[in-house]
Image (tube, rainbow over all chains, first blue to last red; front, side, top):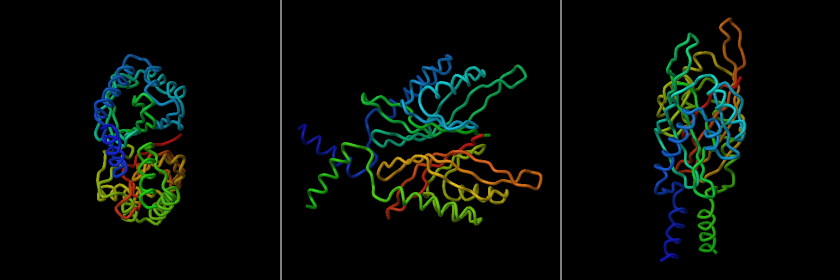
Length: 147
Length: 147
């Protein structure tokens, strides 16, 4: 039965690049939840821990950033600038097996420069990868603003 | 020999999500060249034809756009606004088989509002997919500015 299952799995993988893994949607949703919770509690290291070691972040008006240290730095900068109440909503998730591609929308509250806060938002693409233990990490992360 | 080759192929696919296809790098480079040439000749329909029918474009300061008609519209708007001399440079390309993920950098010339032109640039992530004939099309396309 084990060999049979392996064979079937190989055939499925060979016939389609889109391998549906039970739990991928839920697992990535859970990772987005803890990412958001880390940011909203001001924990830039906790945010950075959601990325792969060699992740790339492509943030608006910033150079391309590689690696967790640089990534922690940009999230710390947003926290220090007073950005709060990040929300993340998945629009589309395509499961490619050991990677998954997500389109999402975000909102956040940012200082308006006059002592108040203003809501801003945008959209993002994340390329997720699983590590050796099957835990999903952001590998590429790019976003921009939506009017 | 044919069965052996198929078996080996199945094992390779089953053991790694990163299927290397001969020609993918060159094929996508060629598609980026014709994309750029279409834009630089003012041919928004030619640009749009490089996308999948149900592609998504996530442009800065714009809502999420789906489908070739909407995508042609935004490229026509950039052409009408006087944007010229688009360049595209691939930074990283990860081949996933029937899809490929690209990080790249772009430059362009845009009107400066005073009768002159100014260079601007940024970075992008494209999720490419092959159609039934194996031709690569942009499926997701997101970019933002770099200072």
